[in-house]
Amino acid sequence: MGSAPAAVATERPRSQVIASSVVDGLAGIERSFRYALTPERRALLNTIRYAEGTWARGADLGYRVMFGGGLMSGLERHPDRVIYSGRYASAAAGAYQFMPFTWTMASRTLNLQGFGPEVQDQAALFLIQRRGALQLADEGVFTPELAAKLAPEWASFPTLAGYSYYGQPVKRYNVLKTFYERNLAQLRATASPLPMVPPLPPVHAVEETRCEPVQSLRCHLEALDRVGPRPLSQGV
Image (cartoon, rainbow, N blue to C red; front, top):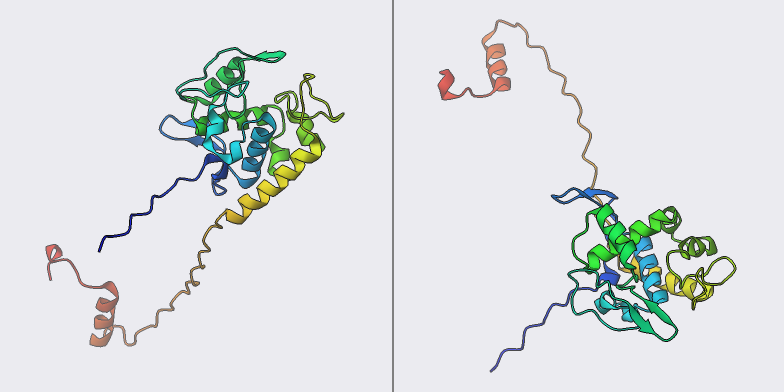
């Protein structure tokens, strides 16, 4: 009788990867700066991908998308290639449609290597912070003010007036808000809480009883018991 085929383990896409127990700071041997990927930040990153047309149902394929919808052959570096599509031309690439100059600035600041999904996430969080929107993002509410702060960075995000900062096609605020809230709820539901560690029992000082009379044989034996056995190197 033949054995059943072994199940193939599938790795979660980056759109579902969060690490809520990690804080912002230096990391790795190279001591480069890294941003924490909380559910709130991941939901905003996913919303940017949705607005920029690289969501791809959350698949990592979105990290290879170039302007116009074509795919990069690899993720070793930013392609830095101008693509013409309709009335527009752009060299934007990646999940967050980085322009070459913007990518160079972010990657050098954070000491990022390559153009893979993890470093793209880090660069996007850097741009969010650079626009003064990271603190708003951490509140877990997609407000018109948050969208407007990011509008100069991502043309698909609406200003407070509801238009693109650059006069390009824009996503409506309510559409982005709905996507964000649903995605955040899913991420929070799948986030595993940190295990609760029971507190240690209090340590009470043990009051030492006084032995009387102090010169008795019993007092000497009790003193030896408290000290414990001596190593052979110190004699018997």
